[in-house]
Length: 223
Image 1 (tube, one colour):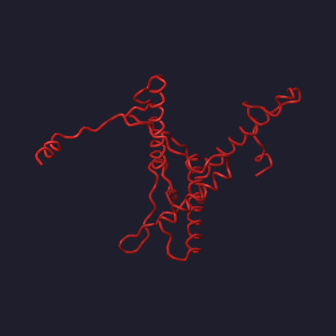
Image 2: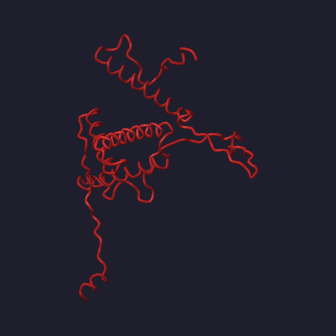
């Protein structure tokens, strides 16, 4: 590996400020250039993260009746032995499910705003038969997974410290984890931005009312 491998690539978009650039535009152009370079480098880094031993786990090799090792399965296209499998905490299906649920909540709130402002989409922009399923790249899913694991480790560590200080329980309880989550969320909010640690969830009003059955009314009249 040479020093040229560590040099930032030359990008056509968002070039850095040149000698003839106006003084008022130099900082703006340099900020955009640095941000774009870091974004590309981060994308390359996480796109290659699936080859790291942290995200790989060796497959358990099976044995026959006589105790002989069976060969590893082979890839149906390339024919290579598949000795390793992915070692992940969150699968792509889990991320899509979480993202789809968040999109459904945002769609319901958006429909409520559209009804208030009379801008259309009163029933919501999301098609009930084909809901929004955001896709994640391999690097993006691993970045989300890394943040999720770091958050859960900090939460559980806080719960363990609380348990040891109180000294009433041998194991971490669910209530202790809930209190630890509130502490961690407050610390994250205080250390990252000027926002409250708890945001109130704005639920859209319910427009569908359930009708009571005639059988229940008849039972009440009979009594």
